[in-house]
Length: 373
Image 1 (cartoon, rainbow, N blue to C red):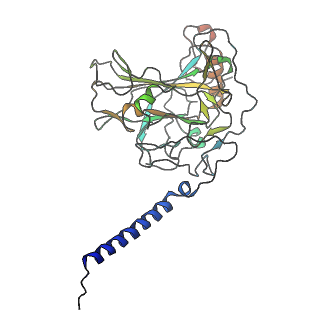
Image 2 (image 1 turned 90 degrees about the horizontal axis):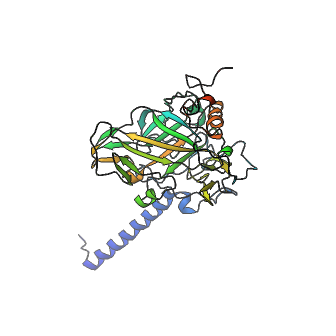
Image 3 (image 1 turned 60 degrees about the horizontal axis):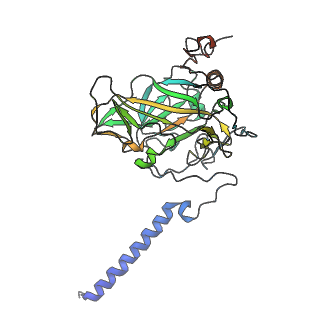
């Protein structure tokens, strides 16, 4: 005999089934959320709180620290060994010199959907990046692997990794051509206090999730996107002059004050800070980040002009621009350039030579290497 369900009985069955399905989904979501949802362990004592770093445009978002390479315990903190202690930020006014900088001229060598800072050990997890400098950079890069790698920088001692989201015009990849200019400058007024980067220091400048307003007001912003006579664009301009020498340009500066404790933190930013302005445009490191390091400034030029309506970044809009730095300089080479050019208050090229002060000599020889004794 076939049993027929009346309408009210059928509705009751459906309600119960729906409730059971929702409960099952909720339990699944809690299980998949991991410690963050179930009550993650508190931050270790003395470690700075990490800012939210949801990576819009990445296949995996948000990124979470994992045990890999230089971070074997996977907590996102990579201690400096030894830490730098006993440093007080300098508010002294040094002898006035307009320049205190040198250049690292590094070419693009490959692109890949990797990010060894944000997604270490996770090949293909990132949006596409354009890599300059070290020619071995990939998701599995560590301080040791980069130090053993080659480089597309003019100075063989610069095996650092530099990368940024890949630029596209429609579906065509656009790579900067030739050596790009990466400045190493004094970010603080007392340029005499700047010291070299510690090996293995890494950080991210900007964020792929920042709004146009956040991009415009970023402390590292210089003049926005430029092309031809168009300046102060905080997204891609609608069009650029079609003259042969017109390119899309952007300059952006990195924080230059370090806490002296960590080579990286979970948000890849908390261990670094921008100088603070005191008095008459005097830039001083904050007490929380007292160690003055070189200020990196990306000066990028992409060979694209004309109609810009199809120009985009792998991370999204123009204001999603950001970049990464992973220090793998040969220590002696970096020491020589910082001492001669930044502390010595010169305007140096990639050899550490100031054409306006030839009598000061160069930090490196004609092969961009340290002179042999």
